[in-house]
Image (cartoon, rainbow, N blue to C red; front, top):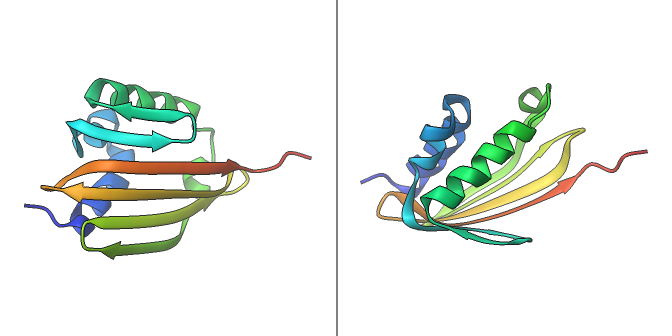
Length: 113
């Protein structure tokens, strides 16, 4: 079974591999908790990532930088930025049985002049 560190690495690598690879880290019982609400199940998670990937503008991935990464037991924490698109974002993953059971995600968009 994959460790929390392995699941985090898989999740980060999956963005380059596409939607199916992203969704493969979740189960039907998985949830993503957002400021706007909670998404549960593979269909909702797939839709969330599909919209996220569609919203990526040129230069985003080149600007993506991890500020802090920590893994403790079943919990992985990631703080990142992608300036000028995202000033700061955090993800927290609760990993159970080698899959993301619960993820929280919050992003602060860069202020526009």
